[in-house]
Each structure stands twice: as C-alpha cells, then as structure tokens.
Image (cartoon, rainbow, N blue to C red; front, top):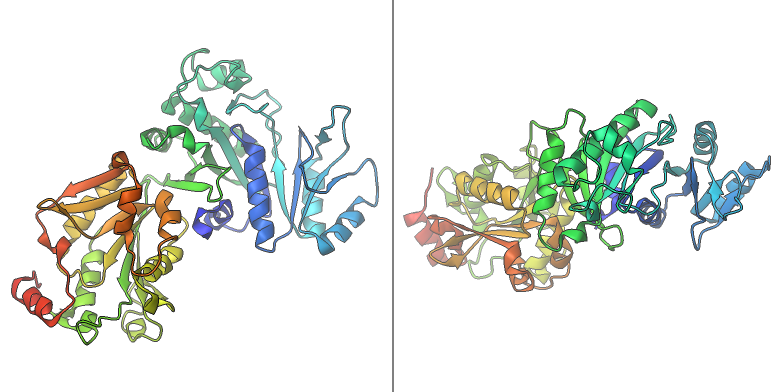
Amino acid sequence: MRQLKFASILELAASTPGIISFIGGGGKTTVISKLASELTSAGQKVLITTTTKFYPFPETTNFTANNDPEVIHRLKNHFINNDLAVYGSNLTAENKIEGISSFEISKLREELSVTVLVEADGSRGLPVKGYNAYEPVIPGCTELVLALAGADAIGKPLTQQTVHRPQQLSKAIKVEAGSLLTEEKLALVFSYMLELSFKQAPNAEVFCILNKLDFFKQNYSGCLRLAKALSEQPTRPPYLLGAEAKSSEPLKAIFNMNLEKSTIKVAAVVLAAGSAKRMGKDKLKLPYGKYTILEQTLDNLKNASVDEIIVVVKPGSDWLDKLDDKGFVLVENHKHADGQSTSLKTGLKAVSCTIQGAMFILGDQPDVTPTLYNTLIEAYRSSFKLATAPVFNGKRGNPTIFDRRTWPLLLDLSGDEGGRSLFKHLEKEQLEFVETEESAILADIDTPGDYRKLIKNGNKP
C-alpha cells in the first residue's frame, strides 16, 4: 500500500522532486536503496549518485566517468532497457565511487529525465552526525532534502561511538560532549541539519526521518516526545517521518510539524457498503430526525476534529450523487459482497499519505456524538498506541482508531472480519481503552426491530 512506502514521501512535497539529497546518519544508504526500489517498481527511472564517496551498490550497474566524454550517451543507452543505475566520477583505490559536482547532477537530471538520489554526506554507519564547515555537500539544485538520524542513538552518550564528529555536533547544538542523547537533544540535531540544508539548497523542502523505529520495541512514547520537541524548534520541517527502512512497509509514522494543527492526523473511514440483508432494505437511507441514518452519522463526524472523512459505498450507489460536493472522499468497493474486510481495506487505501490513524465507523452509528469522536482522537494522539477503542459497561464497541503501524495487519483480513479481530494479535500495552457513557457504541441496527428501538431511544437532533 502506497501510504506505507517511502515513495509516498514524494506526495508530501509541494511539487514532485526530481533531485533528492540525503544527509545525516542512521541508515541513509538503506533508505536510498529502498526508495530507489519502490520508484523503479512503479516504472520510474532512477540514478543514484553522491557528492562525497560511497561504496558501489550491489546488484546494480555502477558507472564512472573517468573523463569519458561518452558517459551520458552510455547512461542513455542503459536507461532504454533498465530502470536503475549508480554513477560517480571514478573508482578510488579503496573501492569507493567518488562523487560528482552539483552542475553535473543538474545536467544528468535534465538530459536523462530520471529521478536523481544523492547521498550528500557520510556518517561511517553511525546514527548521528556532526559537520565540518564544508559539510554536508548538498547540490544547490536539490528540490527535496531528507535529513536522517537513527532512533538507536537515543539514550546513548554523545561520543564517537554514537556520533560521527561528536565535537562538531556538541558545539553546534550547544550540548556537552558525553551527555546522553535524549529526544529533546535529537530535536536539536534535526533543527541543526535543517539550517545547514537551507544554506546550501535554499529552495529545497526538507523533511526529517527518524529511522530504526523498531528500537523503541513497541513503546513509541519516545517518538512522540521527539515530535513535540521538534515542533517547538524555531527551525522545523513540515514533517517528521518515523521509519524502519529494512521493513517491507517502512513508513511507520508521519508527524505534522505545522503548529496550527495536531502533529498526528486522523481520518474517519465510514463503512457504508453493506448489503443489509436482515433489514430487507438499505438501512442507511431510513429516516432519522431531519436526516437519514447515514447522513446523521456523517453530520456528527463533520463536527468532530477529524482531518478527512472517507465514505465507502457500493458501486453505482446513489450516495455518490447525494454526498457529492459535501467535503467527503467517496470511494466504491467493488468487492463489497465478499464481506466487511473489503470495505475496510478499500477505505484504508484511500486515506491521504499524511494520515497516521484511521478511525473506522459503521454507517449506522447516528447516535455516536462528536464529543466521543474527539475524546477517542485525543486519547490516541496522547498515547500513540496501536489501537484505541471505546468501552461501555465493560464492553468494547465502535468506532476504533487503528494506527498506521497496524495497517499491514488490516490489509490481511478477509471475509467479514473487521478490525476487532486484530485485538487478539496486539500486545495489551499497545491498546488504549476509553470509558464512555454512550451506549451507542454497542448499537447494531440490523433488523426492523433494531430500527424501531433506535427511533424510540435515539438522540435525534
């Protein structure tokens, strides 16, 4: 799913970047390799290069110029039948590919019509880096900079075992050498890298990536602390991304650094493509107050603090016309007859790439209030746990918020399985239960009797 790939980062950029530079530590080469693989799998052509030095990429054709005037021609021929290449000026005695100039990178991008990924500094495999005056070497033509650090630096001392060039880093962020690197100090590191990036590529966007998120071992409160600390810096990125670069779904977290909004975005996914066999008619169209059942559910959502609302309907449904131009994202589930899991997956695939939590709502929940939605969202944003659900009189109900780290599990569901089946696969420590006085979280409107009960006891406006 695209939202879990590094390639979705490109959708966050103001315009599609053709030249992307990578700085910092914590797995730059792995991130570059994963992004290149994702882009080429999508049919794009990618050139990997450097402005410093790096080792040749395995299982990839590596080109060096060596004063070869025909190198551009050779690369053009290569890209006729291939999607990926590595390029540098020459191969050094230590078997490293030496970098090229900013001018050459701009020329290659123009003549080859490829996406260029640039490793713009080295960190000797360490999670954090300090910089000499001439570093990093970011091409001025760069359109997007990805500044990395490794989560495995947190709690370790600012020494040469953790930081490449610790003296330079200590001086730059005004932190005593040897002191422990906390999330707050790592925020200073990211802010420092942003300032360096803006000096060398003033027109580029800069995103920060905290790699090796698996270091937290299911306790992601440190990730939240870093996001909060970074949002308070005078120099901050539009996004902080949490990643596990070696995972098949590497993009685990997206924090919005815009202070006017929450750092964690939540989408509402309304499941409205059911067959309603027991009701004998489309229950979502039944009158409820001044609306229908579905319209009341959606009206409550519009008064809650969700970042977007996605409505999953059956193909050809007249809801597509009724709800058009009302601020909803409408998607059709062409496999609705195969069970609820198909609607869940259809809605999930439609969420924006900036979304971190997906709150799944049944279309026949007209009595769940905006207050409860907001309570669940705030609880999730505070705890950052994998799943957040309401509880009434000891019974768990709907809606439930699932963090993007659980989305691969949701995509594996089949038939009439809903998100509730995930709870048995998640650790207790990663579940957040919110007590509520709203019995509507347990309501199930499947039969005419259920509908009559709703009309009698419901909270119609």
